[in-house]
Figure 1 (cartoon, rainbow, N blue to C red):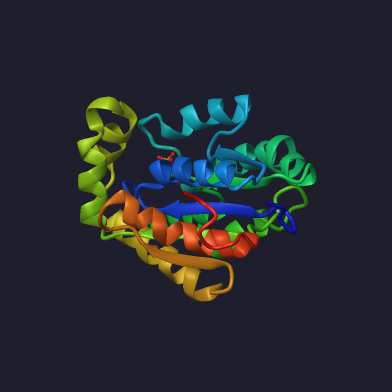
Figure 2 (cartoon, rainbow, N blue to C red):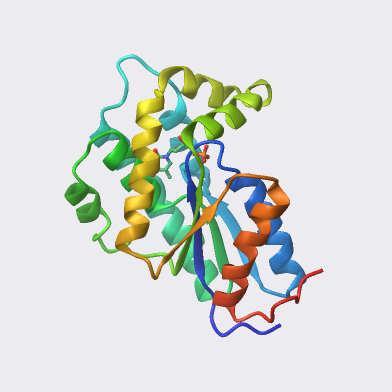
Length: 221
Ligand code: TMP
């Protein structure tokens, strides 16, 4: 089905909110609907970005400072925008991105206390100033998200390590930060209840995405 224009869509949420599962379901839905698209993630999405991801997610003592964190997320993002996101949009493909700049505001800003002005200033730079057209925020109580993510720990050592170091309070601030960002930009954000069975959550995500892409309701089986 033809789409009026490609959209830059981001998925956001706290740890364990189910973004990764849902993004692959959304991708299947777009394929079945004939929507050319690219699935990607941050930090990552390019070879250099994946290397930066390893630096960012490796626990270290002393830890990276919030500013060092911000600049590394920004470096990976600049690379990702220029090499992946912009070319895909220019080629008429919708982009589904697992985390983007709202993650920086939520984690480095609301979570770690870096002033939002600094984060905004970085994202005003040419090469970093692309805003998403639509942001799907998967919202979940922190305890539920952490429990879900812990259940995956045997297959994902990097999540386990992060949780040993991160407190419930920190993730609470991140969740509240995301909700605050959504309140500030209600036309860009759709807040989705991420509790319950994944198929129910998928239906909650599919409807706003289909609407924004101008797809006929019920075009997917
Ligand atoms: P993921 O587990 O969803 O792939 O995300 C990796 C981690 O990176 C997650 O703990 C959130 C964090 N993150 C930030 O702190 N700031 C950012 O800008 C991004 C993109 C991710």
